[in-house]
Image (cartoon, rainbow, N blue to C red):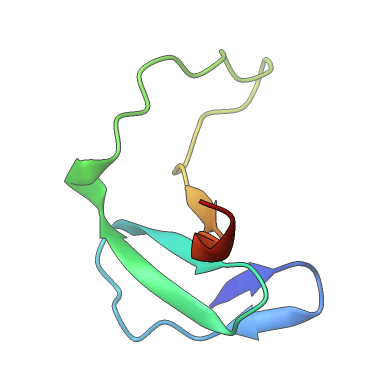
Length: 68
């Protein structure tokens, strides 16, 4: 389950570790393989906590070719 913008929820049938592109203004979610994302510097978690996982959502918008 992938919650986007609070009210929108997408169900992802791919249970492997991966991330997502989300296309603004569309109901489109595109998978990103986990190895394609490099999260090099995470902050230390607060005392008493550990990082369980990192979920990356990259938001896309279509390029307006009329203005280029």
